[in-house]
Length: 343
Ligand SMILES: NC(=O)C1=CN([C@@H]2O[C@H](COP(=O)(O)OP(=O)(O)OC[C@H]3O[C@@H](n4cnc5c(N)ncnc54)[C@H](OP(=O)(O)O)[C@@H]3O)[C@@H](O)[C@H]2O)C=CC1
Ligand SMILES: O=CC(=O)O
Image 1 (spheres, rainbow, N blue to C red):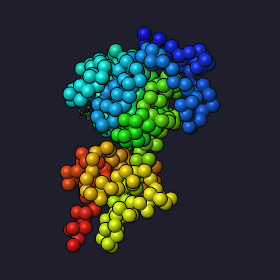
Image 2: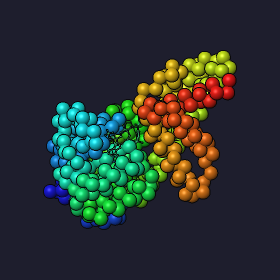
Image 3: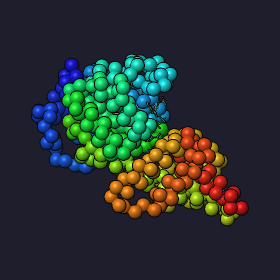
Image 4: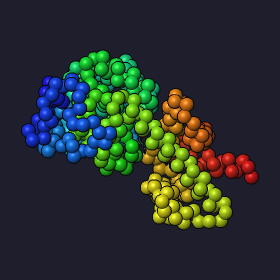
């Protein structure tokens, strides 16, 4: 059943890749680090999408809209979340519900997991009644959580020991891109699963990168978020400095938006930061987790990252002020507190 659904989807003949053994590791086309949707056409009808049963574990800020987009595209989706009530809106839209990750992977061909951190990703995959207990040969597990390479490799090994395939696929892009199906997937692992999951990644995202061995997707995501966390901390310093010297910080945001250092993040978050409101898209606790994991990655190769290390300290201070569940732009509050201590 699973083999029929995942590995022989009912995709029109013109779209099918050259027949190969499912477990042949040789790529279907020359290995490129950038693989766009156009190389792997999406099944064209709702019936074709619906022929693969999809599991989704983790209905948080990101998991919920991602699963919703799969449902809206006509996929057969089964959801699970530690806090069951967060599954209700999805069930209202037509999703099935199972009461453990094990039951989800036992009944679904392809399961996605979007969990908070390495601990929860490992627990949901490898713990009691976890995904590993229900999964088997012919199925696939795609972990889209942001974790470190070692955790991803551990999950991969346990999944693959069952005969199933594994892909790590952390995403770049926050709540709004998740709602709009505009995420960027940073994938690594089983190439065959990458190809079979592609139509579903394309429903949830705007692009996807295949980066080779498990661990490379995790590392890429951590490097990207290390840069993002440092950028946000620096932006917060700039807003406060502009205010202190009597400038209008709204004008600063406008100036930044027109120049070479423009980033959508600044225009999006700047106005609310100036008003000291932080509607949560990317929780500050997750940004600090990513800084911590990125610093660990840097440490593992003796790479110096002083700017990220300083930014991480600010996120830690912000957490200690009870800002963990606010948006990560609330890091500015840590600087405000430092300023008031000085004066
Ligand atoms: N928000 C964003 O902008 C982005 C987030 N990410 C990454 O995606 C992942 C999810 O983020 P996001 O959706 O924002 O986070 P949320 O905090 O909103 O959701 C976390 C999810 O993990 C579950 N969870 C937490 N701890 C456990 C546990 N011990 N056992 C089982 N389930 C657990 C939560 O369940 P429960 O509901 O029961 O608490 C929830 O489903 C993180 O790794 C994050 O870094 C990546 C890109 C963007
Ligand atoms: O991980 C967060 C993001 O915005 O990307």
